[in-house]
Length: 307
View 1 (cartoon, rainbow, N blue to C red):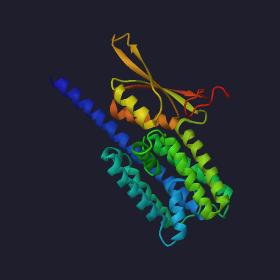
View 2: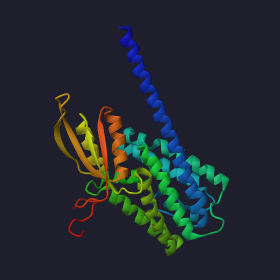
View 3: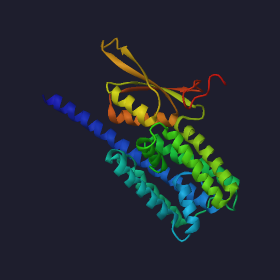
View 4: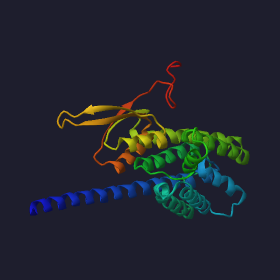
């Protein structure tokens, strides 16, 4: 009995240490990601008069007409507004997912705004657009790799998808809002600034994938074996908006039959799925295979007829 109790204590200690390690890694990645993102915005983008999509682009437009208001204060106000909208419309479970970054990121914005440091020695729009994309990609990649989100316009798009336009995917809504904000930025700051914003966005998207899965991967194939397949497949279909195929497999050692799910998705989406599975079923088994490309008519893949 004593040995059993001792063994249980050992297991509990191991779980406690693992959780503490996970929390420490989460804190490290979120802080570094926030710092890099804030540096990109206030040490590279703003001093060179550039902009991007999302909430940063909205704040840039507003600050153009109200320059006496600090960028970090405006951003924090918008971030908290989005958090309250998320809380009211989707409940605390969803709002809890973004509260950490809603608080941490604006603090780093305030820090770099106070430091007033400029990365480039002189104004150079091309270099600034490239480095903004690089730093933004690193920032987002670090945050996404731990299963977190900045909780800004992607949250608004998720709410719109959930409440108003369930037939339109979140990725399409994100693309539309980025296009609208960049076009509005072009009207305010000039056509060239909008074109530079497109360059920044493209570079950022590529760097995110590189941070998550290296330089060679465009798609991944995930296989998940879990007894909680109903919850996991529901999350993948409704939240990540990817298809799931499943089959029943049999473990020869145990003789038990279990269900295996197969998903084709982007590296970023795979990290979101991994994070959800980790919270839902710690006993789940996940394998990931890197793919160069996927042909098919499903959204996000290359058309098999064209290719």
